[in-house]
Amino acid sequence: MAHTFELWIGALLTLMIFSFLYKDNPFYKFAEHLFVGVSAAYWMVIGIWSTLMPNLVGRIAPNALQGVINMPEDAQPQYHFIVPAIFGLLMLTRLVERISWLSRWAMAFVIGFAAGTNFTRYLQSDFVGQIYNSMLPLVVVSSGHVAIGATFSAIVLIVGVISALIYFFFSKEHTGAFGATSRLGIWFLMVAFGAAFGYTVMARISLLTGRMQYLGEWLATIF
Amino acid sequence: MADDRPDKEQSSRPRKGVIDVLKAIDRRIIFLLITLGVVLPLIFHLVFSVRTSPIVQAIFDKMESLPPGSKVLVSFDYAPSTVPENQPMAEAICRHALAKDFKVYMMAVWATGPPQVDALVTNVIERDFPGKVYGKDWINLGYKAGNQGLINAILLDLKGMYTTDVHGDPIDGFEMMRDVQNLADMSLIVCIGSGFPGVREWVQFAGDPGRIPVAGGVTAVEAPLLYPYYPRQLLGLMGGLQGAAEYESALVLKYPQYKEHAEQAVRLMGPQTVAHLVIIAFVIIGNIAYFGERSRQKRAKKA
Image (cartoon, rainbow over all chains, first blue to last red; front, side, top):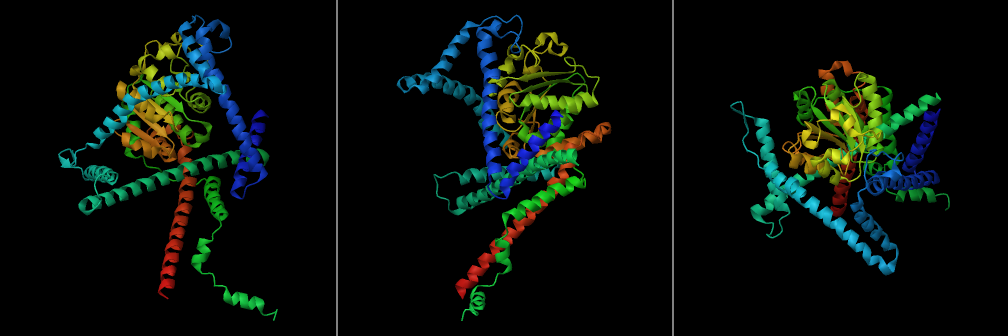
């Protein structure tokens, strides 16, 4: 019974959202606003019970949350978590204009931590790692023979990387051989955008198929 | 005088050619045809055979190469909105891992991940592997906040972050957790993701620094952004529904006993193919209209 009720709610909301494809209407507006409101409430509750309670309150006063959230029974108070608690409270000073500047301290900490943590990882994985990934042998030999397919792929990759990089090199005028390579780079970029568009279509159709299956399940409960 | 006005208007109005008709196609007709392209194959169970590509086969081969008892961590980093794409991937990977007698560690860096684990438990473990024991063969570590910071932390100290499982039971009480200290103890990490944090963060914060094999399954929108990591940083990638269908094909080919429940994505590729054909047809129609209009304008200029 409960499942059928959920199915009806889900199906009716799906139809309300789909009604926008015909034209904007109050049913669509209702479903849209409901989604925004429920999402905001959902993420607020998740924030409190998945982040604030276990990571802050549960560390400072674990006994207060025993039986309320998942906590080890022998958890001891970790009073140094008062420091992030103070930083968290400083964020709320944005609500009072006179002392809102205090929130910058907390923001500085967040930005500094994020920049420091991400910098090395991005440098290793996305900068050095990607350069390394582009350094491929132009002729791929497998079992003593030239692997035609792999060799072709390697050449396409190298030519694509170099020509696309040249397209974004603006310190030299794009004329002559340099300009021709730059134009080749545009072609590679266009192919990449086309592939990305194709993938996006696939993703959207997958979601539509999922919804249609859901509506089919709903209709099966009626007929 | 009044009687001949309609005739005059008709004669002064230019006749609508094919190009004008094509240019004026109502978008609702396109929506309707795409809907039919999806619904009809679903009703008539239109299924196409799917061949596994090397980038997906690489994940399957890696799983096949691991010995029984290997530790595989699966991270559920997606939300209900992308379940049609991501859930078949997660289920195929876990079905394969349990069939190979691996220890499966499930977790999520997305708050919306744990409900997907519950769905997987119902669809895969309870249905196909009722003999598998929780805490010995598989475990659900649940969701922790922290995004890439969490991955960074568990790379060095998993038990420091996960003191309990998703049900609140102490982590050290489970047999399969006794010899796990951090991510380096995992033979393979598979992230099923649909955004940030996702496969990229697992590569950046676990795979590359820890030299741990990482494979991914992502929504089709995200797949083009992750291909540059293959094969040196990402051992394989399932891109969208097609990637899921390819993995399911490889799985059913090797383990035909799971055919009945393990071909969700393969079944959905029928509607996918027909809908794509409809879109391709409209892209062609759009181009015909565009070039037709251009040549008409050129002719008009010459005249």
